Image (cartoon, rainbow, N blue to C red; front, side, top):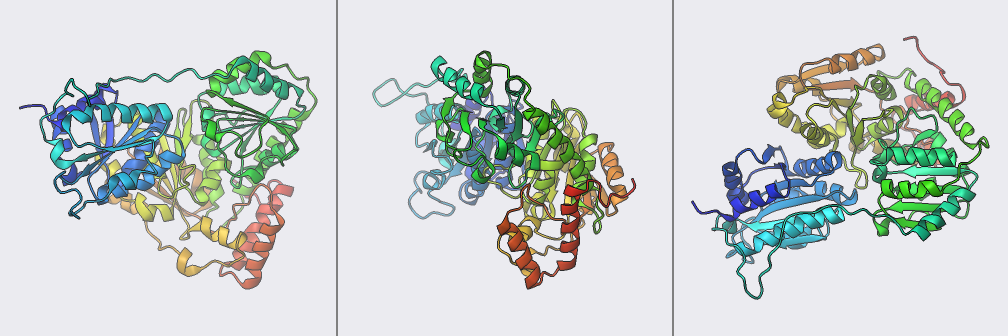
Length: 599
């Protein structure tokens, strides 16, 4: 049998190092699927429940491996379903290739069934490179350029393959005018600023008396370098959420997350510093950074378009974080102990006590903070933790202490609901020997994550380590939005939009052959985690949590206090519980351990 375009396609992807693709079948990609079946075990096809989940998994694969993520979908609705997950990769600068089918070339432009203008549709999310193949000899350079662009620019790219083209005999490009001959291969360059620019940055940092560091996802592979620079500068360091694993939380000068989901020590660090070093972060909320003119700034980022857009930096360095910090370190002078870092460490120590006090407050029935707090010391070495957007991200951000060797992520720039479970699935396929724990709210579970538990049921017996746990915060509320309505808009909870049906998620897990655990008592939280971690199969661990425990920001503004007051004066359906729980949270910042029950 002659080699088809589909056969060539998979061989070429394999030559590029692709070993896994996430997708869902359809007649628009029958030629590709038949060729993948013939190709054998060289590339693993992971059958998801929905194409959006395939794109989230491709994004997560890139995050947890540094490799190209690949997702596959049929024409029409299959292709359009990918968009949300692809935007997740686009906004978090992940290299992902989307491969989609299209109707036969002879039908394109005829308003044919499932015919969409895919190039226009993908033009924004995959704007770095989106092309439709029209001839067999064209496919080679389209594959090569799409992958090289995705890897080199850390962008989403898309290839559109009409269904009739997939089964045509493959032809090499002819050696004549109008044909090109492309090749396989990409190695990331060493990107370091010029010596003069490094010296300018060092001068700013050496003159600073109170240096603050903010790290993001771009610093995930620069842990030792960040620590060395922080020690030289006697600095404290805060972490954007995508950079949560960049620094271990057992370092006493690491202040934790920053922003609305952040910590008070991170707020204090930024409000009191006179110099800011930002490393590999696009943290979007400028109000949590120093006031303009308060601090001199140095920023390091691989992407020039991410420099000096959150804070006006004095020195902007285009470079790889680890390489740039290594080159910068010899130029930095050891700062004497002036008490700056000691004050930071005292704030951090006090904050952990405050968090424990908040986590141990009584609630009706379970305090959601306690769920994350009790998990943190029980996380096995080398764990991978994923989180969804929503109120569970607050407890992930604040209460989970990352240790060396751990990884974690969530939908950052897009902040999409529904990413935690597909992220956890992709993490497990990428690292089947590592424990994986996902934190997700009941809203995201009902939206699109429950079905992907079926994917786990299909594949888990092939994993070398069965430790895979999804923790569901069941509070029957779209909780983050409820609190945003209360605090930002001054509106009471709108039952029609916010109330969720109560679903027994743990029973669904049992129905499909997984283990289900249900916890609705505070004293059972720790035991629930220990049972889940000891299970011989994947687990859905469902906690019945109190929706009226407020995710307090690190600094309460007058507008936020006014908004909540307006809500309560208007008459919130949960007014009594909101008042009691808010009082507990505020008091715990003054009296650590307030209302702390016996263990």
